[in-house]
Length: 448
Figure 1 (tube, rainbow, N blue to C red):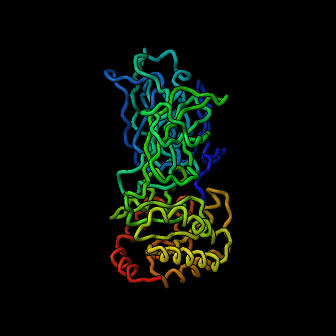
Figure 2 (figure 1 turned 45 degrees about the horizontal axis):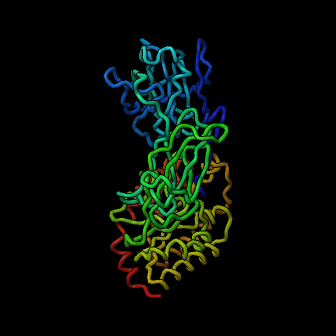
Figure 3 (figure 1 turned 180 degrees about the vertical axis):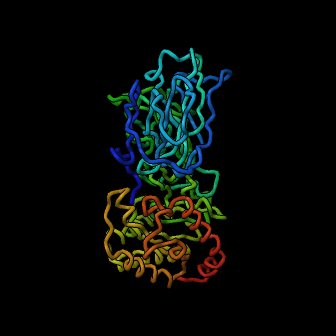
């Protein structure tokens, strides 16, 4: 399935995503759950007297991979008693609408009289999908501000491709830290660097209200992208971000490529996308591999993309990992088997060595809870039939690695029941590493 989900807002569960100025009695809903023995957030770097931040700063703290959202509190003074496991009624501002470890708080609305005159204080903690704390609050951070410091007037790109294993994607995802007063964002994609050639025209414009957007087009070649904020009238707000480069070229002579759906495209734990590489199993490989996967693929869609997406690169080995979306949606196992066989035949006919990967178990209850999507009742039998076929071919068996109860994927392996979290992605990558010498020999021995 495509992980292109807007961040939903629920009252009484996650995503009680509100940011309110608080005066007197707390005006923000209070979650009664306690974080128990959860560790505190790693500490952010505060502003200091010698290095103050802007009136509209971008705050940043270490990423917590267990977080789905973050909760931030801002104070006009440092309270004498401040519990780390509960919200404070002394906060003048609180929000849970933070889906990344960056935030541009609206300080001009929160405490305009204090900017440049007296410090503010802030802290942050990680929350899970249902709004439960998964960390204690960080230590209170002091925030000095100065009018002399430049305000945040452009988004800051967070998706950086290339340079490490698993970081070259045919279908990129663009993500950025946003501005608090933006109503939406415009992403422009170019063939020439617009910072070097100001006359460069975009080959595509994408718009979104979110802080990320998935590119539905395969980007073969070298491309450049940047993003800017839009106001409620869809007019530019501030300036363009810095330009980022995407290079996905056949001239790099990729020996290994991966063809699959969102499990291989990357991302997981609801709020992390394929540019969060710790959620990609390719990141844990001992060798370089080109990611040709596309979120949302069925096995039929993967087959349909083969000529367009695989043949230009002519990899020596092709890891094929698709079929989960088809089977959980009710496709017959024979349909998926036929698609996998067709992919194998196409690969072999073009001198490419296909290596199939078995399909890991899923958790339908978690899928329904997170995505509100059904799964066919007999999914386990459908998966068994397809995996039985895969094991008769040159393959890597990862399905048996995952802990299950009555055949259902253990909840701790994938928050959403479908896309493995970091531990699961690492398990897949390490299983491929262990099997690689054997499957290479087997693949090399196979003929059309």
